[in-house]
Amino acid sequence: MAAEKKIHPEVKSRLHPRSKHRNRYDFEKLIEGFPELEPFVKPNKFGDESIDFSDPKAVVTLNKALLKHHYGIENWLIPEGYLCPPIPGRADYIHHIADLLSESNYGSIPRGSDVLVLDIGVGANCIYPMLGAIEYNWSFIATDIDPIAVENSKTIIQENEILNDKIDVRLQHNPKDVLYGAIRVEDKVDLTICNPPFHGSEAEATAGTNRKLRNLKLQKANKTEKNFGGKNGELWCEGGEKRFIRNLIHESTKFSNSVFWFSTLVSKQSNLKAIYGALKSADAIEVKTIPMGQGNKSSRIVAWTFLKPHQQRNWRETRWEAS
Image (cartoon, rainbow, N blue to C red; front, side):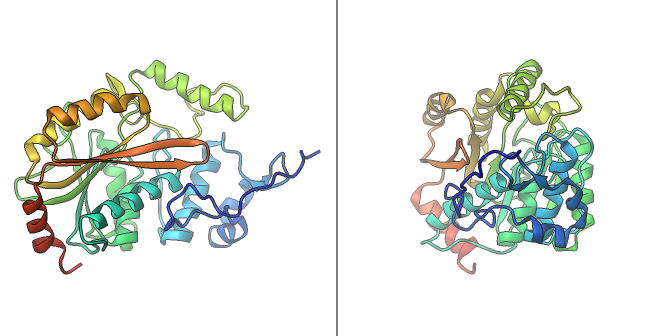
């Protein structure tokens, strides 16, 4: 017997106003466009149409349906065990960062292929470049330390004509580097984005996954049953999120004139103090913190620039005035 019908808000108000995901999933339309989703859709304990979010195949299939329905992505696949991202949250980062550019451009979002974005740690799913290229027609440099992830992202681009010539995927040969080897001398990057590894060790990452599954009232997962997957470089690195971001800030000082805005997601609020301290030591000219939220989860984007006001004005006039 189903539990008492749950009352859902009509709009997911914590998502960005331009998000295509503010309404509840319309499974009828999603199945119409992607019939492979139908076997995974069943009433949940409240009697609502849903999928089993503990089933990796169901999560991947839902993503395929969402990407086709909302963004026109016909062919999207990820190797087994690699991170399968929740698309609404990823889309929100893109929309919020577009607003950041707008604030630096007299309230107008710079659009078009002349706008260049660097995605640090693109993974095998290529999600941020796909969304940014389709929503705002931006060009992307996408880097990763994992050769399999790089090749899979290239395959996604090749198999979707809408992405052709918009995303340059580059292998980061030195896993200790973040920006070195990713940004070339001739590159002028309007903004960088990054979803850094959250955990500081594999054990911590596993504990985090099991905690998430317990919150879903599911049985403890083994390594092959993580609902959203994730390889080591995607989920954890030595020192975790805080050390990764501090390294990013340190390297960003060497590219102060090549990038307008640097940015990164920060999942742990407790890391903000150390991040702000590192930015102060790096002499960032301007620092912004942009709150984000999805469901009960809160996070934020921290962005910074080293460009002085006259340099920002020159950047606008030479790169964005025709946007």
